[in-house]
Length: 67
Image (cartoon, rainbow, N blue to C red; front, side, top):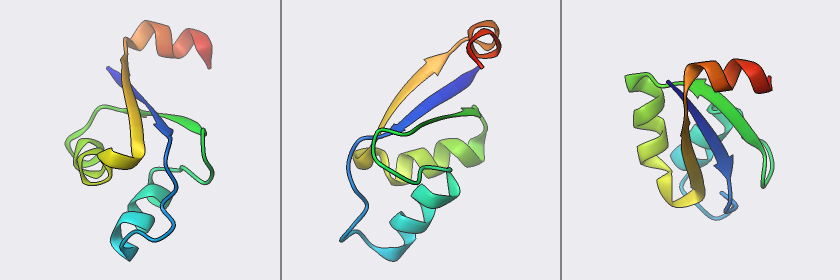
C-alpha cells in the first residue's frame, strides 16, 4: 500500500520538530502531494503532524499507474 500525503495547513508557527517532519516527508508547499510506501517510520511521521495533512491510502497498482 502507498499513502498519498497532501499538505493542507502551513507549518509556520509550529514547533521546529513538526516543521522538520513536514520537510522530511517532502512537502515543501501547500497543496503539494507526495506518495510514500506505508512503513512504520512514515506512519509515525504522519501521526506526528496529522493536523497539517490530508492522507489517503492508494493500492499499489493504482500508485504505479498514475506516476
